[in-house]
Image (cartoon, rainbow, N blue to C red; front, top):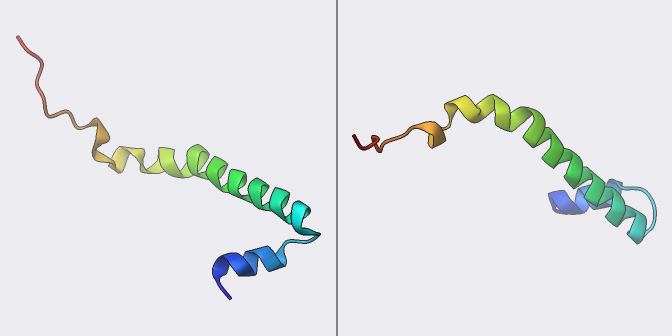
Length: 56
């Protein structure tokens, strides 16, 4: 059984309830990523390194 199949089998209720719970679980993971994980690793990312110098 795959990882996703194991999660699906652990969710309670019939198929529509499982689908709603799975969407809530995904939304929770995304919220945790945007609230804590991404801000914590942002200083380590090279996106703010400017390589083009201003003209002048």
